[in-house]
Image (cartoon, rainbow, N blue to C red; front, side, top):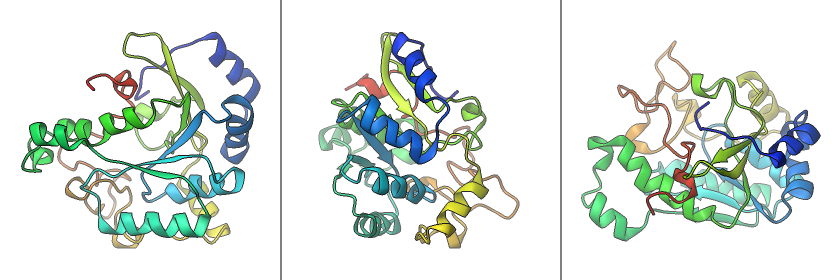
Length: 246
């Protein structure tokens, strides 16, 4: 898995009671039974984000949506976020950005991405998300098993290890078992708008400097950090999203 997980009595109970669910059914159970008032959704508003966001709008549109505005996103992504908020009626989208004081020290010229991609992700994604999740016990992610080898074994309900190795925040993956055809069918059946860059060959969309079009026959995520030995931004690495380094 792409993040170290732990086992706890509570995790075992959640998996026993709700582990057979996915999609909207799992989301409903987590919001209204397992973590009422203590769960948020983390969304990039990328190429497939509309599926999870649409489910949330039908289950409970007041659940907070944490959006990582790194300062390096495509303008199309920001406009897509605004469009989906209006269309889906999501009432609490929280934009999380990097601390200007940290940027002054770590990335004063805004070119850290070119010198140290992991460091850039840490400053612009990992640390802001850590702050945004401080008061939540769990979060929804849009991760799927097919996306990377590291994700291929993940469960729909996980518990992360905190920085000290003890059981930490829960991570809920309603789409873990979905594939690209499932996502496409859902989007078409519900007549949902796609991210405008998808039709231009961007299959997995992150920050502008580190996202390329996928060449014909290329892997689904080959446009992310192309040429680097990197396929994760770091927000699913154990400990970091629990405040390490802040």
